Length: 225
Image (cartoon, rainbow, N blue to C red; front, side, top):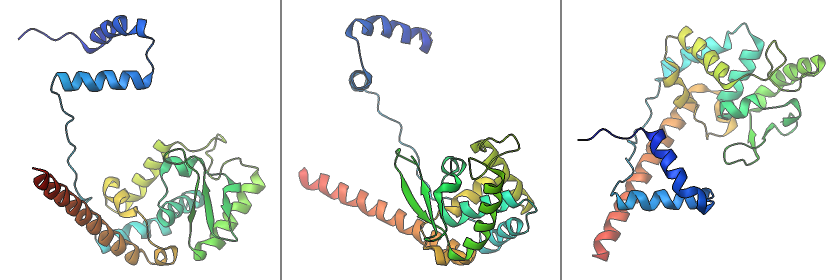
């Protein structure tokens, strides 16, 4: 079998052919779609597995490591992640003006899909968040969470902080993140054990719905034949 042309060299050949056509993104997408069909190359399906969730005892150990944090910024940051289930990239772009203490809302600007939305946080967390907000406003910060360089935290730094407390609890951060996937009502998040049980039940429900949809598609295909 002859050696393959390196991908970059092959891309340059494509460019020479395509440039006179003045392609845009949609045109290129269609070209490569038809190329895959002509070469009979299908997309490799990704394996879908349910996340490995922590047990109640393991989750409580991680929460205890957070509750006893000596860093106020880390404490408020991790509690917001826990109570709201927002993404790291959404957390680091929060501003003090995005927090509404009256209605217990956070405004997420340009989140996933470049859409704005509101998320709730528990009323029991309002007093602690208000104290933190007062400190940040007194320092004149632009973002809700800023580093010593007066810049927003990076998502990499957020992962490092989660890893720090996960290690303190004796757990891997990859096991912690799925256990935080929210969707529960804010008042249930007051008790971490309730939150964790709700997430496990929702994960099983999602898996059952996917299996049901796949079964219906298979039955529809058989009827068409």
